[in-house]
Length: 227
Image (cartoon, rainbow, N blue to C red; front, side, top):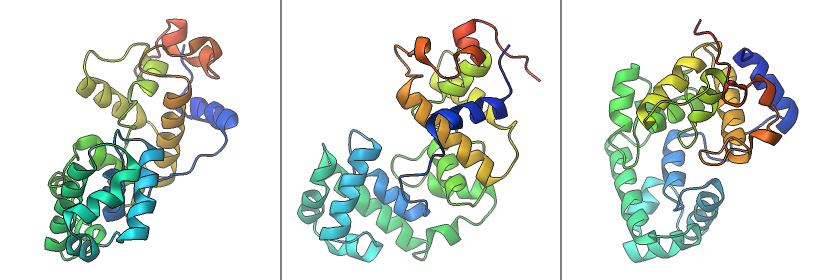
């Protein structure tokens, strides 16, 4: 039988230590950061972000004042398709400008309206909207890491759904069990993200060395009760 989510998170935190976000939590800055690296990773996005800040700046007026070749050059440290990412940054800056330049304030509306606004930005679907609203402290949503929603589903249920949308939905259902506050749910997001990177990989998970192996329904074959 799988342990409660709280016990699982305690075990993960004992193993990894407390985790902190390595990306900007301001909604606009996060959207810029997101397009600073490709293939997307925290390391590549951080390199592109640092270069962009140094060479051009990250505020909407700076991005829109720069030429596409200038933006492309500034983004190259973040990896591939820098020219496409430069276009995406201009799109982000344009939408933010149309919302008065303060995206966090523009998102302080009912959740459905906030999601609709966020989906105007390139590359943002429901998982990204969940992450942005949670880490900005706008709404304590049950966000699962978009690149590894399977982690909590495997631990609690044994097997993830047959498609990404189903797995993400099941991950959110599990995370809804946590207290509905930003601190609890950002902690869960960060610990599950770290575990997905280190052990619970989508392919070839390292179950034999997993720090929560004994509590994991995927490893033990004993899914948790759905209550």
